[in-house]
Length: 207
Image: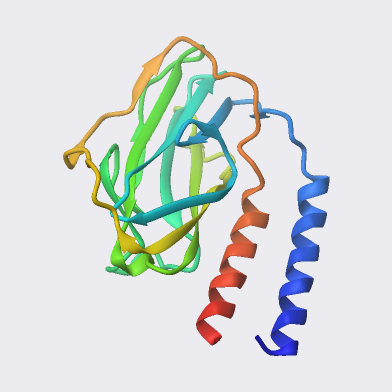
């Protein structure tokens, strides 16, 4: 790697660590909801995830409603346009396809809505480390849009080899709801993780 590129990476890492150290690590909540996100059962962000091409992983979002609101959410990958046909991940099972939106209507305060996807890397992801992101939008009954939280669920290193184990059947599933709030925790530091992931992808492509 050239000296100039190394200096750029070092600066990005420094900014990333500053953001990391100054972020609030309490449970993510606002006046409308409280929520957590999990990658393979771990509270996100997971920074050392590794998968093979075709190997399944689970992304789950648990949203506890404080008020009567609708919830919209979806998953994307940093460095890849939403409209791009060849995405680095595909959904095997879940409430929406990759880069598309899942939305839950007519839930009331006190309910917990759960979105869960099973995804797997495609050949497009082979050899890269790619941030897998999740975003939310909350709406009241008058369709007024509130906060748009966005963060990285996991930075996933995708090995250039194919997974040979069992894979769930590709199906569509609806989000579920209960009356239990999520446990306390932190879904991580998405903006920092996404910036770091994009930078490293760009640097790798340059070299």
